[in-house]
Image: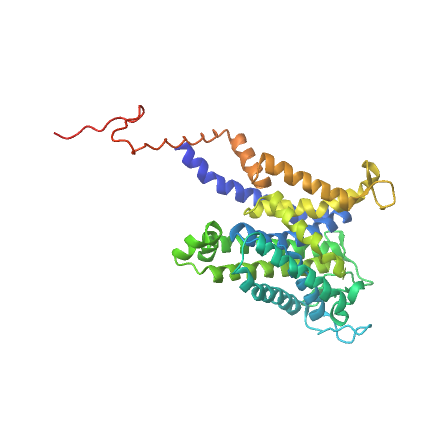
Length: 394
């Protein structure tokens, strides 16, 4: 009876912890330094995009190395749609309302994922990863050379987000005070990122619990078995890429707003690898672990850079006699991935579950009994010692 009660209390305990974290995130800008608020804005953008990749890899079982390509589409799509026409330098802008630009940027990223889905429906595993990696190199070539749209190598400025006349940017000559705390651009974007992350998390959970999510699980566990059960494998592979790329596009919009100026170099192969590190460290298939992994991977380089003076072998400049914060962060990513694969392949989410079980005093599950040795029926009669003979009927 107590075991059943503990199972019923677990979801409510997790929900209470989630609500506590949400409440802490709501009040955090009133107490945190501007540096940490800026770190949180970038972390929220990484969380939204990482949820999209985890939906593709963890729920549908499709390996993708092109996540940075779809993030770039969202970032540059919003910039193109929201920028006013006739900008200096001959850059194109459509001058649409920012919310419409956000929706079109997310839809454009989803359309790109849908166009790639026929390839995803025919290849899998490492072959799909290599095929998707080609999108990153293609995207880099387009971003550098399509100067009227992207600004070329130097990039272009990102227009601010405005909703119903309220600007989520610094307004010259105006200071927004909330409970006596001045709210600048980063504090405003903090709440934009928080709302987007909550919505993305709810969307992820609803997709996973839906019939489409169960079909994706069937495709992940075995495409042949899924096809036998009546699942349209090609269709649900395409749906997984569509949803994943849309979340990546939304993360790209948040990343563009956080940077305020985007360049093609940001959306290269290294960014795609970082997102794979996020979901592996956090736990493939775990939305909560994905959020933790995204926070760790996205914030570590800037934190190391800020405290580089106090850290050995870490320097702000490549010529400073040590390694830069970005390189040091990649060493940390690799160490964390190797350590987790050796200790707990399920990532931070599995470690958290193990810790909760120990704190609750639950006994560990006993190891499954070994399968019995099959009886050799080649001989006429063979009776094993551990098998009782069957009594014959008179």
